[in-house]
Image (cartoon, rainbow, N blue to C red; front, side, top):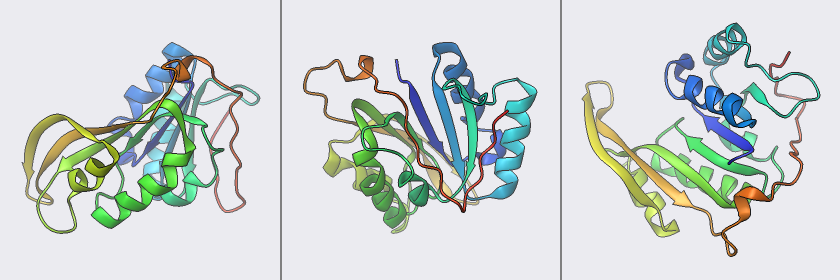
Length: 187
């Protein structure tokens, strides 16, 4: 039962954003959706607001949209503060490696980092090669041939070490440090 769900890459609220926001509502979690595209943030905010899922002031259940680069956003979270992370923004190998390094300390023991599009072609699109050294696994291997990004797809995961296997159930209060250069939406 994750209490803090973070997602990067909003695809203008047409991808995983509605599902993760809905899940947060259902399980009583906080969902933070991050993107550096203002239009994607605006579209996601509109969709979340229409469904009544924006976080209410002083609450820790609901969704907030954070306009920020994913790597910069990682610095706003306290160590061990994220239970579930879905990375689906920039799929370039070097960027994903930086995201793992930035977010891994922020993950709660027993948490999960999921990666979209782990299968790709070309030197700059080899996410599977990046997550393997961290014990990453491929959960789905299907590829899609979209002309704009060549064959890609699949889902990968890094399971964050949890020595007592109970990490997901002993959740400390949520903490995030909002910076001056970002904005986020809440009701």
